[in-house]
Length: 122
Image (cartoon, rainbow, N blue to C red):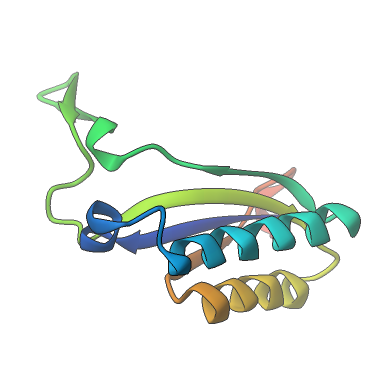
């Protein structure tokens, strides 16, 4: 079964990140090691970090017409920082991977099954 991991970070943390800091370098090393491990086990389908949230366009229907606006939802305190798709034998394994990430990084990660085939079978 495939799962999508949506990793969120605090908006203030995103804006103040120091890419030269030891903390940031350790986080990058963690993700590189995790990516290597999941590639070796065949569980990683894809992973990608996302650009600065200020480059986001949100499209909503307003009076029946799609309208694009700058940025993510204004009321959001967290921003979507990255996503991954993994393929695991069980939900427990996917949850273990997600828990490992949260334990190491501390940010929020949402785990969602990917619909394939009949939605009633998920």
